[in-house]
Amino acid sequence: MAQAFTKAMARNIFYGGSLFFILLFLALTFDTSSALPELDNRANLTKTVALGKSLWEKNDCIGCHTLLGEGAYFAPELGNAYQRLGGKAGIIGFIQSRPKDGIPGRRSMPQFNFTDEQLNAIAEFLKYSSEINAAGWPPNVQG
Amino acid sequence: MQYQSQAVAKPYFIAAIGLFVGQIVFGLIMGLQYVMGDFLFPEIPFNVARMVHTNLLIVWLLFGFMGAAYYLVPEESERELQSPGLAILMFWVFLIAGALTILGYLLVPYATLADITGNELFPTMGREFLEQPTVTKIGIVIVALAFLYNIGMTVLKGRKTVINLVLLIGLVGLAVFFLFSFYNPDNLVKDKFYWWWVVHLWVEGVWELILGAILAFVLIKTTGVDREVIEKWLYVIIAMSLITGLIGTGHHYFWIGTPAYWQWWGSIFSALEPIPFFMMTVFAFNMVNRRRRNHPNKAAMLWALGTSVMAFLGAGVWGFMHTLAPVNFYTHGSQITAAHGHMAFYGAYVMIVLTIISYAMPMLRGRQAANSNRSQVLEMWSFWLMTVSMVFITLFLTGAGILQVYLQRFSDNPQPFMVVQDKIALFYWMREVAGLVFLIGLVTYLASFFVGSRDAEAVITPGGENARVNGPAGSVSGATVNSG
Image (cartoon, rainbow over all chains, first blue to last red; front, side):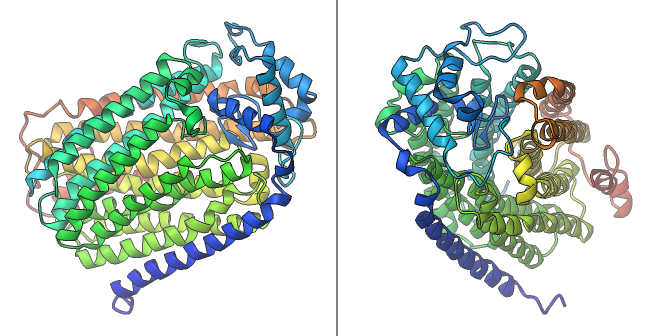
């Protein structure tokens, strides 16, 4: 048995298997790319949404929140914040109302002092994110 | 130490350990912020502490991988390193770039750091684990290229062993997939899709090749088992890693706007991902049982066996627990994910770097083969303190995660995120206590480099089995039973 399975065979399984599954992964990636326009809500990907995403990144929101379940687990999921907080006005109101020095003893989002244009862009970005077809996730409005 | 140029590994290992300490300190800060929400607010908000915690982890593991390569490649190639000077230069470039980046996170608001470093010209910042300013990312690429040149030339000009080849493939893959960190489209789904090409294809892909190569090297050296046998195992293990792990990427494509067929591909292939880790456990124990000699460095053996077990538990078992799509629907992005992340990173990558440090550092510090008995005993204490406390960190986070998933997502009356967080605070407190024990283990680990450093080297007393049983802090075989 030990002789039947040689190092050369093991090597061939590694190179052959890896190559096959790299190609399969690329094929699935290609297929995903062509399916994405139906799913990723790109029709609503406006300049304002793009600005919102850049603000999302520039302030490292993902360092506390999850978005479609990815990120940190310190603060609520935001993929459905648009629904949970009651639309754009709810999102903007929440971000604006954060106290500068936090809340004693509790977690609190920092006060970022966004302009009205920036607040609108962030809300638009979260609206766009909430309309991505995420296969029914999250399970309920609490995220 | 057979080749002088192996000595360049030493500063890499020292830097790795130093940054490891920083990572743990910030981990404890975050753990406290989970239960005392205003701790250090607004000076060090949670997201900043988390960036420091995760980025330090990545950087110190990279220092460890590079140190490992600089140590083992000359020995495998049977020649000196292509350019020791370049290795030392790149050490300082990487260390200074890393230190400046961490200081940037801590000293100015993240948005200001983005402005200073010109992020709007080429935006890559603000994505999980890839928070580094774009200039830092470019620096990482330069360091990686110089490193690959140095290692690659040494491998090409010297003896070509399987370990060298596998390590080189892993390191090239690491560098290639990092390039996807520069792709940041406005389209959130595409952004997330290719973000995983860095994160998943690193830790569940090419890093496993690096892990396998380092483990195989240490096992050859410490057990004296025939290279042919070890290399055959290595090929099969890494073959299974890539066969399962590549399509296994699909377990991240369930709920981010990608086609639903990924729920099948991802579930099936990632359910197979524990196989290579289990094989690694069998491999390590088998080689130690079939050893032809007893190596005096028992601490290194303990780390090698420990990493094979803990990687299987953390990456394999805790990964499988929430990888099937119907389960993941509820657990996605919860404390379950955090539990898995902690034990998987510790078991697979922290412990393999500590394995090669444990094996190589005595030689780098002028010993023949091993540290004194006293320092080995202390090192083994640190192994158990850190490993057991990491098990408890994982268990407490898993408890928190199960309750979180139930209260917030599964029950008939789903409750808001923060309400649930308050209810599960006990588990976060317990996690913090376990984290403090981990810190004690880490301090013990640091002490093991100084205590007993003037004592005589540990040696194997003649008499085979007896020598094994009489080892410090119980036997290696006894240790292995406990770790399972």
